[in-house]
Length: 105
Image (cartoon, rainbow, N blue to C red; front, side):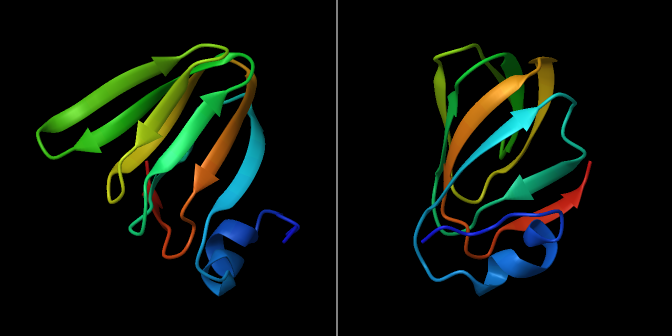
């Protein structure tokens, strides 16, 4: 089901999605300004171009995972995460979007 995503989507519209996976592609040119967490499933990230460092707030402390073009990572469900952009580019995200939460970075 195609869904238009604008700036308000992550704050007010994501909660109205039916259960399932949200597949999206985003261009990132700057470090993320928030942490996010998906309580109902893992998030899969495929770096299509550019590179970024994912920062995961794991139970035993922060862990960083750098993704270059063609590399893949899984963010476990319930783990807060953010990212720093090394080289601007695009990534494909497959997310269990229901219940997604954000907090300031």
